[in-house]
Image (cartoon, rainbow, N blue to C red; front, side, top):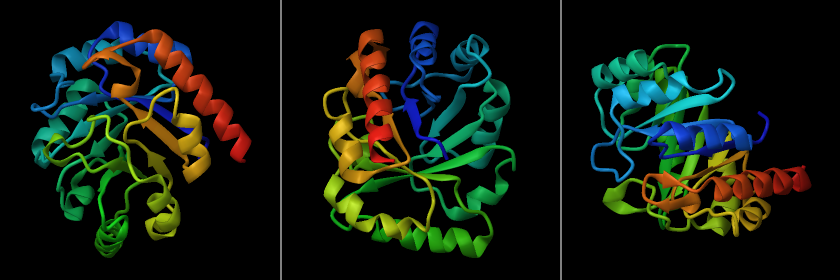
Length: 222
């Protein structure tokens, strides 16, 4: 896959357009009700309707059941789901085949070993995720905390993700994203708090800096 940049935690049309105009590949819409960046399906649909078709619309879910996820996919018009909770691999086969699956993993002291076991279950059940997103272990907040992931640990254990595209998240900002890309050599990056004025409100200048810096850094590691 080409290097992928996602601006997550989008809550309004203005920020979504800023992400698209800056050249981001995807936006993330967070349907986890306890998130500071929570958005309901009606507001998300208004955002999606104002975006160009080429930008990927990703729904972020945390322990939703399949009926809730399927309903939001249909109402909003999502291209992909990012599963950020404790979802069992059996859920994958119940998702529409055209919807891409991004499996998030909160990287703690065990690194990527628990993820490797999880992917083994996915393989046995017949549907693998399309990409892996590695985030910092933010406990009950399930991401978006601004905490840094352990880049050295992720780099050393990348082989455990079974060749799947690896997206790096966790505390990324315009100031550190180049260093993170050089340290891990991921297939993409994901940012939420690192381009915000306040939770749920982005800063268009920071988005532009982040996208530009990430693109430049990714070009250097090829």
